[in-house]
Image: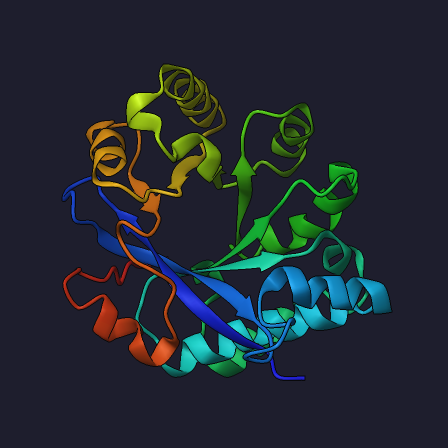
Amino acid sequence: MFIGALYQGIHDVSKDSSGTVYGYEALVRGPQNTHLEKPSGLFCYAQARGIVPDIDMQALYMGCKIFAANDPGGKLFLNIHHETIQSQIFNKETFTSFLSELKLSPCRIVFDIHDQGTDPAILSKKISSFKNVEIGIALDEYKLSLGQHKYLIELRPRYIKVDSSIIRGISRDRIKQEMLKEIINICKDSHAILIAEGVESEDDASYVSDNKAISLVQGYYYSRPVEVTNMLKSYNNHEIARMPC
C-alpha cells in the first residue's frame, strides 16, 4: 500500500511575527483519491485488520525518508500511535540505525504522542530509551484533561502542543485565554516548550505572537500542509532554522 506524507511548518515567532521555520510535522497520507487517503480512514482500516503498528511504522519511515531526501533543515515531528510504541517492531536500535542510513541525527526527531487511553507508565518505559539518544517527545492536542496530566507526569515531554480547540478563536474568548495561561504555567513548571496549534486567523496569530511565553506556532495562518517537493517553495518567505542539536 502506498504511504506518503505532507509537511506543515512549525514556526518560531519569538523574534519575528512572520516566524522562522523551526521544524515540520509529517502528516501521513494513504493512497490518493481513496477513502484511505486521510489518516482517519487509513487507521480505521488498519485497526479493523490488526495492522496498526505495521502501517504506522511505514508512515514513520516514509515521513523520515522523504524529509531526508529533500532536507530543508529544522526538526521533524512524527505522529506515533500508542499500539506502535508497545509493539516489538518499534525499538530504538532499529529506528536509530534507519536514521543513520538517512544521515538524520536523532536530535532532530520529535515523536508526537496523543492521549489514547493507554497507561502512560507503560509507554514511558519504552519511550525513555529514545529520549536517551536525544529524540524529543511532544504531548499532542493538550487541553488540560486529567488523562493528559498523567501523560505529562510520566512522559516528561520536551514539547506541549496546545490543542487547536483552545487556540482557534482565542483572541475573542476569555475562557480560552485563561486556559492558555494555565497551560503556560504548566510548561514553565515542567520545563516544556509550548507549541500553539491551530492558528488560522490574523487576530489569533497576533494574540499568540504577542504573548512572550509562546515562541512556537503551527496553523494555516502561517503555512498549510504541502508535499515535500513544494516545501521550500512554500516557505521561501521564511528563514529556515538550521539549529545545532
